[in-house]
Length: 296
Image (cartoon, rainbow, N blue to C red; front, side):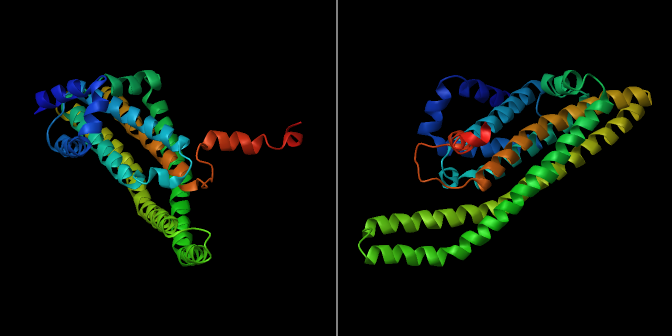
């Protein structure tokens, strides 16, 4: 199975990936979800785990870039489902990394680099950085985005009858025709479904943060027990070895999770614009630089 997955990664690498995804997107998605489930059950080699971590980081950055360039939240209406898939992907990586850390004290080059190079090989500093990132994500970004999604869903549903009556009135007065009215109703329904789904999907991010903390603590405690009882390490050696790997695994999981949480915040707080060619950067620069006297 591991050989098959490695061949699959090599096949999907390069320029062929775009054509494969475009022509067989449903099959690719089904195979990807099955791969996520198999990751939880079957041990994954450190080299293959490095590939998965790189894919996770790249996908998180890519989704964030897409969220920045959309003009309306409904242009990324797949985001609630995407949030579920990315959360499952991160959990699969965390479980695979935990298995490798506790069994072999080796979870690949990326986790080792995050545990040593990023935090300078100091597990105390790494633990503090991990806690800071987790607290910022959980309390600031995730809680705020969750509240915004909840309020947006409530107000969108409350405003639906009035908007539908306005569409009917415009159609009766001849401002719009029946086809335009149908399109407006579909857009209104899509918007209400998006914010309703986002209200529940934010719980995935919240649960992912909590799971990341629990997994990191389990890795450290389990690593201490295994290192001292089974490998004959001293308490300091076991703490240094398994704490650095656990913190590296936690950072590798929490940084993409933070990017996805930031994406969720951008999508939920985005105010729809009437312009089709606009994006978040253009709106920020246009509105901030629109009053030159205030900047003088």
